[in-house]
Length: 410
Image 1 (cartoon, rainbow, N blue to C red):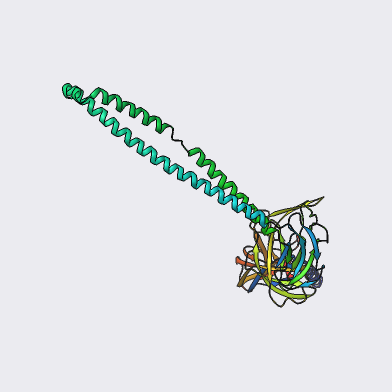
Image 2 (image 1 turned 60 degrees about the horizontal axis):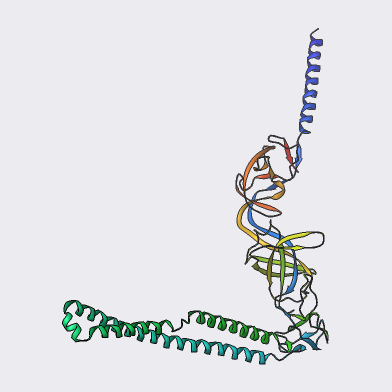
């Protein structure tokens, strides 16, 4: 009987052991295998990546004089030209006579005003002299009137009545003379207007003379990139906006730059002085942002319109291999932080409240840790708080990973 009991106990123990081993096996199978990265200190560089158009830094449009006919065209598109080379000549009207006549008219207007000023000076002197005479006569009248009251005998002896009559007549005559002296104020205003008009006419004549060049001459060494001038024509073509286009355009292809169009999201990132790397036809170049437009511009086509901010990039020499008009891939360095804690961008999650967090492995458990981020690039991000060097963060944590999930690093 004792043997049966012992055997029964052994069987129970064995079964219990088998069940325990089976459960342990199943528990081991519940670990989630994850990929991890170690938190380290390093340098982070953030780039704005886009495309840019290669263009000449020095480009000039040359226009035909107003109403001038093209006499000769000395170049064609693609020609290399030297500074001082005549590109196009025109048949123009000599406008120097118009300028001379405008100069004469201005001089005459100034002379007429000066004559008027001299007249005003003379008239003012006449008025002053007449006023003095009126004052003297009035004083005499006042003296005689006083004498008549104080000493009638002496007044009569001096022939006072006759003197008063004469003096009053003199004052009347002097006032009449003064009233006939013309006021030239209005004439002076007209003279000033005549001078202003004559000056405008002279300025216009000089401007027309300056524009009435008989040729377009290259201001620098370059290449002809556009040509609208045709012998016998007016020298200009029609532009897209309905205006006139340049007769000829030359570009300096030895000094190139790149132009970037920024949208409203990237406009705040790009600043003058930032370092740039360019890749054109599998060749790398370097440069710096040299200009950012102060305001955006809108371009409109038949179907769409877009608003962008222009920025220019100075390209360092050598520029061999770059071709004006083509696009180039560019990476603008918008920020960098040295020797900071960093984690791969693929490890970062964001909750509904906008808080950033990662999962670190501690004792084979996923532990959620909220972090504060600094500079971010496409591949990694600066961590200002929440992690330490050596922490293991889970990469691309799936939706099954939560705080406390059993995990195993792959």
